[in-house]
Length: 566
Image (tube, rainbow, N blue to C red):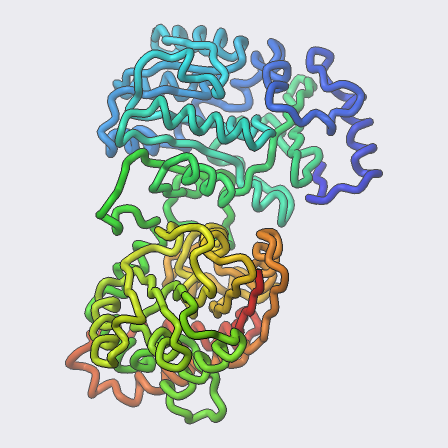
């Protein structure tokens, strides 16, 4: 049975009644199972009967084959020797890591699970597990010393329902790790379950092909899973449906500066093949100056691309010179630079800028917009951009224009803004946020540094709200992304963050106009550009531009100007 993310009162009553009728007598959920949303309840859910059945669900052999050496290779890559298995369960990963030679300590909050894990250690290799019964929220009191790695696997972290409990547990993990240590933590793809309904390939985690594990009821605060076994026995677990980017944000906020996320053990995964599970790898290290090492995978991919000689020559010579973003065209043959500058002018007109105000440009490129704003309105602009090559050009152009005192150029990442709260009057961005793998984080950071009553204005190439996501795969593959934002996404997130007004001025038709115009310019000047831009780059760029044009004309893409008031 599968429920939508927003269950009605009648649906809740129906599920509650079914749960009461079918519940295993050893599991105590009370008269209303859907009301059980407490972090401490997991210990009662993992009773002796359920624990005895758990290995049928896991299927050790199947899981061993599906995971391969992913976790072992990851630990070895980071030079790990000591591991704390924080969610031992019945011991699968503890035994796997002992087999691989890691000094492993096995922790769980359910005593029944630890007892079963100890038995399994003896059975699967005659290992004597070092077991510790501990609640994550007080982990540092119960375990001795510090570890090179902590693994918290099996969707276990979703047993914590309270935000303070989640933050406390992650802080304890951070405290128990050595410097440069890593936390590996996984979760179901609750984004997909909440937004699109439940489906599972049942390939990677729960491999028992005779066991049914499906959500009986789902809303934004509860995922109640139903587990049916071949002998007819039935059990339930109540869990909190963690969204991927929410957990990534929590990891950063407790101190992890670098967080990479895998989908079903793959670094890249597309919308047309949503993973069952996400695996987050968070590194405990302090990066003061080596900014590039702190970038997420998606941002660093963009940085390397825009720093390349081919990309620099293409964007500067073909795309529009100092304005490298989508233009507002008044005729089919209008020059790219003129249309691109019109976008800047129309965005600026929405702001009523005053001399001396502070503007932050996220993804500033060559700084064309910053120079226009500084010269026209007398504002002070901070240009944040990930490409050191573009930033060098920006600084040179600012100096030549006599605007260096009004414009600061900062090498940096819009997922981790090194600015104070409430520092800027205006946040500005043009066609840059799509390069982030964590757009929720970018929006949250932008709102954080925006002054009360401040304004945001930005554009971004997006998926339309009703797009066929599979059609975007060629675009996503080229950008090394798993998704694009959408108008609905930005409106929802900005409203959630307390913005008073979120207006979207739709100019979607200009997206295909612009990419088509850039394609025509590249093809017209190809012989001239052959000496500065490689054939391979030009061929890939032409193919990429054609995909954008097709996406825009099909109605699967969107573009326009957002104006947001705090």
